[in-house]
Image (cartoon, rainbow over all chains, first blue to last red; front, side):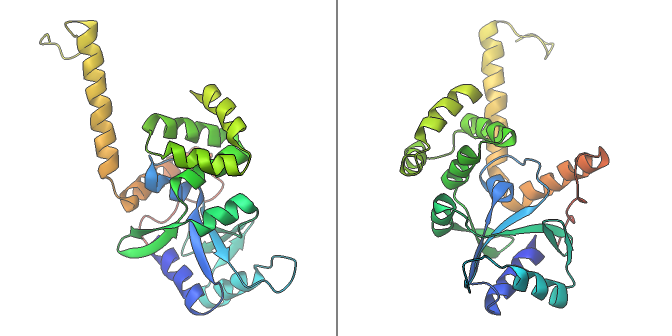
Length: 168
Length: 63
């Protein structure tokens, strides 16, 4: 994944994006047990030129300069399927603001914090997320008070109360 | 404990040994770096891909 991080840093250096952070299962694995995922979710900050989100300049740069291929929702950077996303709602915007720096093979990269990753999974409530949440509950490495605070500010505490009883 | 490693003197002994195993697993997991855990992910992807459960090819092992 070093080449992906280097390429993402290059996107920042060349002004293609303003910043980025890794979310999804790839970030979750930092805090937890390896779990199956097929892509790397990369949240990007871009200069908005209008009301619509346009990521085409990122794709163009990668295709032209990095020989990347696009398949479905993924852009392949040196063989790694990357899905570019922009923070899409208040929770994901807040999660993006609260990312933490970590190290990958000596490279610094920002990832979503464990509590925000959990809050997003609770919000989206997919079956695979429930299984991941069950595992995280078992591991017990998260800050329960912080998670509750995040969930309360996004009206998700009630959902979590029900969910945590179901997955226990 | 008896000489047979699969048998235990008491239920309490069994529970204690299970607890020790869980703790050993957790200690080992916490010692792994992110890069090491992502290498395990690639192995999971290889198995899932071989079983037709992954839409895209596994990640490169290094890179």
